[in-house]
Length: 157
Image: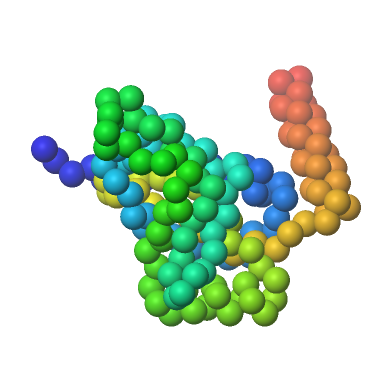
C-alpha cells in the first residue's frame, strides 16, 4: 500500500481565533492509540474546549475530545484523556518560559494528517479583551461588506 502524501485537515478550533491573539504556531506530534487514530480519520474529534500545558518537562494536551471508534470494542480509550505532545526539548523550554513569564496560553488550533501521521498545530496565544473581540467582529463585517460591494460592481460592469 503506498504511503499517503500531503496534508489533510481533520478539525480546526475556530473559537481560539475569536478568543485569543495567536502569536506563534508550532507543529507537534500526538501520542495516540490505534482506535483514536481511526476515529480521527473519520473526523470524530473536537478541539473546542481544549488547551495544552507543560508538566515535568513534557507537553500535554487536555480537553481534546476524540469520540470512541465504533468497531473498537475493548480497545477504546477515554475520549477526554490527556494526550502527550511530541515537541523538541528546546521548543518545550521556550513555550514553558513564555507561558510562565508573559501570561501566554497554549491552545490546540488544528488537527491534521501530514504524510499519514497525525499532527497537532499548537498556538502560543494571548487572551483578547471584550473590546478586542468587538473590533475583530467589526473589521470582519466591514471586510465582508467590501467584498460584497466588489462582487456586485464586477457583475454590473
